[in-house]
Length: 457
Image (cartoon, rainbow, N blue to C red; front, top):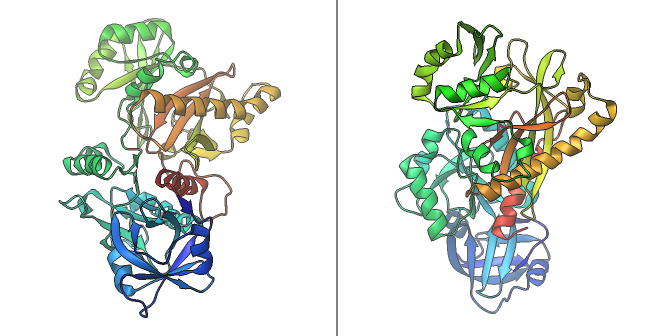
């Protein structure tokens, strides 16, 4: 398939018949488009038979207002163009649909909630790369497979009918929405009927990730000892093996509900539990009393019990690292950024939602007792670990992912450990520091991978 190397701009003109498109001669020549026969115009799921009219030597596409409206091609839209000679198709795009959890037209400052800024960055990235991005929520999915409403930006956010996209990025923020019948049916339909790639199609559970990666001997070195907590013997075994263990909700996020258990020499124990107000401390006379006290939580929610680690600290505060990895324009995993996260004063977790702060990797490592030579080696070692873990997730978990947030930690011996893999990484945690660009790298990577999946790379 021949394609343009430069984005092309859409211009509407009333001088053309509805089924005619005027292309610049340079564009016709570079794409090797015939002008003596009918072609099919594709834009997402939209199809229309057209004729080509040669125009000026400009990289631009001129169409009639009626065709623009029917296809969802907005005046001023910057897209890429490709021509498939085998079936005489002129394809414009790629069209990326981002499935999100909320949209409030009345909230002009944050219509998409906490990801509003990132949605605007996606618009900027699409214009730089030559792509069309729209957003949609589950309640915008119609009953028919091609019935879809979307939100796009055209001097303000607009809502209306849109063609099915070439690629879908699942950014739903809750499992409840993701598992709803309408969403599951929609994703199944677009994948089977239209072969539309859907990436980051599901949330990851902590137990699922650790059990999957444990199948690979090369990845075991990154995994703390970890089990799904089902019985008292498992709790007793772990607390006998390690002075500190952690209980983590299998489906938890943002550090919510993590319990730190410390066993004392006299057999008593105490817990520290994360909450919005800070850290809650409880004392128990025995491990059995603790397990009994946890019975209510365990009945409602599954917990992963995990080996406590003697991690490096920065000014007596816990430190970990968020590696953001993406599939790149060649479909290969690459590290987009790694940032340090330093826990807040009254928390033992480093999540920003719990008062943690971002730092560079160098700053986060500065307060540790590791040698200078080891500190210099660690960034490259963390990149290697993040890439190996991402490839492991892709190999052993049978779902499509294009973006992962991989939380790593470093112990006082310099060993790297995996804490968690997040398939819906926060768009504030991973922001590069001191970046004045309006488009952070993660937005660009999502568009580049969409270009790859749709054949526009």
